[in-house]
Image (cartoon, rainbow, N blue to C red; front, side, top):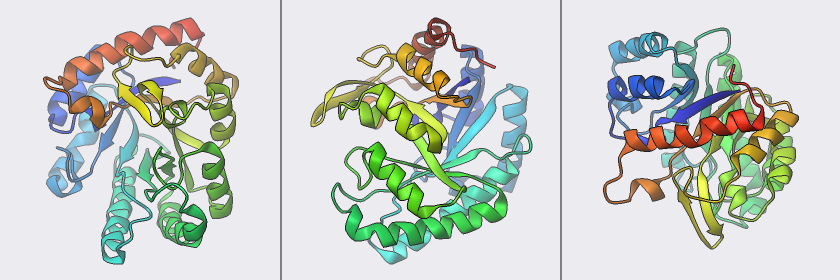
Length: 280
């Protein structure tokens, strides 16, 4: 496995600062976010910048694990959804341009919606995921949808049901176990149900259970990284474990994105050693 970091936690930091910082801390991989809010937004990068970033990754010896355009598959406004779909397709094309080898990085997106509404909108989910899958298949990219607490798909069982119905190797899952942890689902159960569909992962840290929970900086909460890594290893996972810092943390007064990345590394890197998981 590799230990990565998502630039979700650095929306305002220049990529010329974030990449050397992550490499210097010791991370193996990085996930770049291209949503409008971020310094690397699709709309903020001209052709020259898009061509420059692969060189930055190479010079800092960082694997690009994913390109993130996290948006709502179940956006109720058809016009807004059309814009989302166009942006996801553009992100898929960008992932091809940024490929570091034979396989492009994963593209991450979301589902949205509200708990309980999936049965009524299942056809919509399948149709919209199918439109994404068609373009992703043509470009040789995997798009990973993320089940999320408070969304229409918030449990491993629902995610598996949807992926089985979509039935496309181009649509997989971004397995962020934190959303299942705060629902009280055991690590072993989450891993067993999600790993067969997993193309990419996120980890956070958390305290409490829904509805009274919070996401926190790694080391501040209850998550057992060693048990998680051992379960992933037993399941045969050999990809990237990517640290994601939630907006809950980013809203804190005095939030320091660079220091938080270093703190996270100091917590999770030793867990790899304790779990007997080699970073290759």
